[in-house]
Image 1 (cartoon, rainbow, N blue to C red):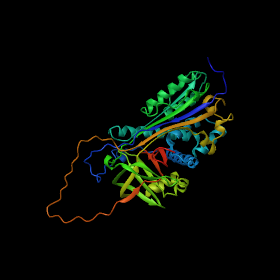
Image 2 (cartoon, rainbow, N blue to C red):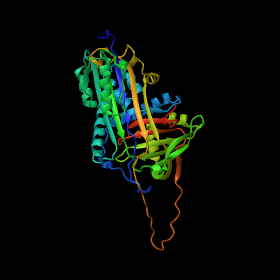
Image 3 (cartoon, rainbow, N blue to C red):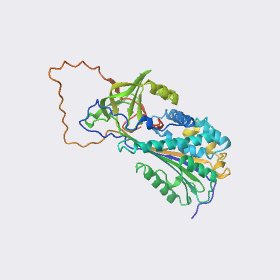
Image 4 (cartoon, one colour):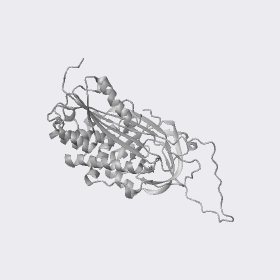
Length: 431
């Protein structure tokens, strides 16, 4: 039996997955071996000025989200690129005050048409980078997909449908939203397919609103370290939580050459992936996490990464396996996105009338950071020196970066888009 009709709500769903940041390596490799990215920087796609501006806005929006949630004691895991893209699809159908409200919260300063074209340019640049990296099976993978579902009774304007297809590559399909279970199952199957099975379920039937629509984005990421960790370097080591209690955390350790800096008591290191992209590890002093998060911005990232220098680092980094599914509606409300969720919302550029509002924004994220589970029976190394060689000069001790307290990780691609942000208070995955 069909449910009685009621005011339709456009449900915006942002979903994503981060595959294990695993590293494949030879047990005989030396820690002094540092392969350069497989993809030639000269081949990497360039971005338009509007695309650069939108990318910076997405970073600032992400840090705003992190600041709102920073008071929470548990681990925080966000995908800025997925959330921004899903919201941008809704923004493309917004008008008047709703359009202005979304733009303000998302830090967008370019006119709407320029923003939508910029997202199209970013999508094309990601596809180009992915095509380059496909030539190497070990290179970083970043695959994003968009799709829109509407109830049978919802009729989208051709202009909006064309925008979704041209700028976001998002097909529009219909489903009988009165059959909530069937629609949720269809969305979840698409999610599972796009995320390589890492997120098998995103929606419950109660998340489907009859008379509404669902906008989805999925991101699948997999990056292998250029210089991986050895399994024999992993062991339980002390990790000091924010409340000063000490817990055991399974942590990896190795000496390697990284882009590194110490700035105002904050250690920063960039771990590169094969084929481009990197993880930025940000380690503040024990009592400086709040002040660090307060100062994060796209401009901060640009200044900071410019100061990084090649340094031999003794890095100790916890293994983590995190997953989360939550509504970010309240977080967006605290940033000023309120009309969007009310009956006063204006998404008339979608349907030609003020017929929809956003009911919820849900994001599911999974992140695994570890070393490759390489199987080996034995590994032998024979070192030799020339006959009668002069004794080697002593090398300076590597700079220690011991990640044994709360820290922040940023995962970026070849285009330096932030796909994932994590604040790790407890690497065991507990609150």
